[in-house]
Amino acid sequence: MSLVDRHIGFVHALRDAGLPVSLAEGLDAARALQVIDLVERESLREAYAATLVKKPANRPGFDVLFDLWFPPTTSGLRQREDVDLDQAPVPELREHLAGLLMDGTESELRAFARAMVGRFGRQEARPGRQNWFSYSVLRALSPETLMAGILREVLAGQERGGLAEKTARQRVNSGIRRFEEAVSADVRRRIAEDSGIEKIARSAVRPPLDQLDFLRVTKADLARLRREIHPLARRLAARLTIKHRKGRRGRLDFRRTVRASLQSGGVPMDTHFKPPRPHKPELVILCDTSDSVSSFAHFTLLLTYALREQFTKVRAFGFVDTVDEITRFFQPGADVLDAMSRLATEADMVRFGRTNYGHALETFAERYGDAIGPKSSLLILGDARSNYQPPALEVLKSLAGQARHAYWLNPEPRRQWDTGDSIATDYGTVVPMHECRNVAQLTAFIEDIA
Image (cartoon, rainbow, N blue to C red; front, side, top):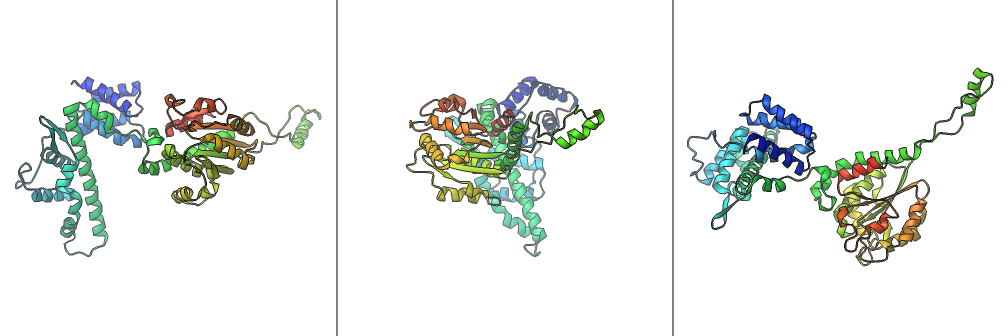
């Protein structure tokens, strides 16, 4: 494969992984290759990173794909003369690894990882075919169990629990993480050599945080998403406020108008107005909390918590087949994870466990209809799948008519709307429905309503 082909394939792989790489940036990267030493692999990596990576969050995925498209050579491994990496027993290899974790360079650690993958990572899947695995390498060497021996050697009689031990632990833990990453990178490289780079590249990189599908996020992803929520909540509050105030004037300022008219013989040539009172947005959230959208429900509850701090008045309601107000769980100062745990056990949102939008809307209108007023924005969050129950469209139309704005965010791909028990289009004719599967789409929705 020529350098041009490898460059084009690498840029396409970045785009497929969700990294925004424009045509101009791809050309910038190609020009950068003309002014660096292509033999220096790290210079090549940094040239590509400088021209193609825009956000720190995109760098890990970039590095994974770079290692696949521009793999390192396996030469240049420096080792102790008394250690034969191909034949040495495991205890000697573990001792060698312990030394690298404390004093080894990055290139030595990666070279050792490549050698260990070659020795322990290969497993026969079936006759004539082999697979490569990280876990067999890590199981053989068990790097996490080396900590005690390294500390004994480093401290050498010094008092335990002090700064020296803390520093040594941090250094060893950092080395272990780098070794595990190096093993995983070499396993991916070997699989790519056997199966093709494009195939492994599609599964090697998770989408960037802002493009993770809400319906497939993990608990770890939710913890990272918490940092993204508060800026979006502030922007949403600002957008709704701006939309209310745009083009409006305040009341006539009679005193200033009369005073200004003295310059024109008492004729009020210029009128003056008082600044308009800033609109304090009020928000009503109606959130589907059923199991079918459980990951999305967790995200929307995080959003609800953030919005609670941005709006003058927020009332939140959760439902499955009946509805309950959950505002009380998101009072200022409450821990969001504790609030969600309490909500799951204390809120009355389930009768029979099957989502029923129609009954939930009717119950909401009956019990909490006065929550919506001319200053309120209504935000409905759910997949519009109602288990073939009556949709209560007239009730929804009445609720939307009482609100100043009404929006519906649906976490399902648009192509799945109106399939099975989905009645997305029916609801969308009453309340504008927006596909909202990730943070990027939520950001676009916030920009659109401005």
